[in-house]
Length: 226
Image (cartoon, rainbow, N blue to C red; front, side, top):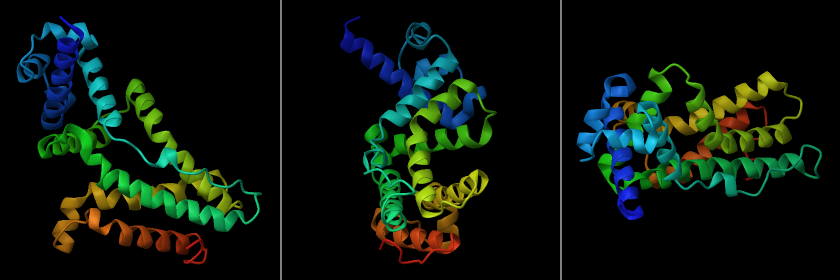
């Protein structure tokens, strides 16, 4: 096969895997079913990715690499002992919240360029987070792509609240990230309770709300860095 044909076949297998894993989970999905969906020979799975687990990892990596991210490109937060560290860290945190929401609501939808693929990728991710026992190879892959988000947020909190110990930092960061993810991940629940989900048009107001709520929770002025 020419490289173009080879890449096209691998791409079809990965996209078919995302749909199938999203519908049936890892245990319920079969190599033959995925290959049939991709209009490819099942033997090609071993050629490209060696196993079902390899195909799953390839699908996870595709999920991450098809979503351009803004957060890793933000200016770094200040060091805790830098001049005006708290104010500058507050500004960095506000930028972080906005960029994270942009990544979720705008760039997350790049995957597959179709509504069906976006939905499948979303379900794939939800299944991986909530239904599977941790698998070292998958955890390593997720850590590689998610670490810039957690590291940036932690650096902001260190400069904002240098008195917090490691556990308090983790809890504060977890609460902040949970707020951001909720408005995108749990759109069905939000629709049920609110009548409609939040979307790209709400990014600015959500950014302000999350920042204000978080600063209050940290015992900081709600307009800090505004």
